[in-house]
Length: 104
Image (cartoon, rainbow, N blue to C red; front, top):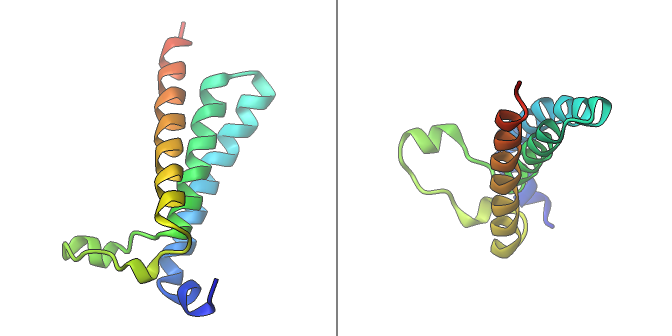
């Protein structure tokens, strides 16, 4: 991995990584502590969102201008990014469903 790729959009990379970790780690801790599967799955999905956002960040300014992201900003292969995206979505949806189903 070249440092030039890592430096591109570093603020956005750190934002998405922090966002995923900030929302995911407490959910994982609650899921483990209280044996709540919904929180655990949702937390893992949010951590995966942070990792995916770090590897291929969504730069807010570009998104608002409807400008396509550059492939040069991506770290890792498209297959890796795709697999992370699918796993992230599956964990978040399963976690949300389990949260709703476990409510009294």
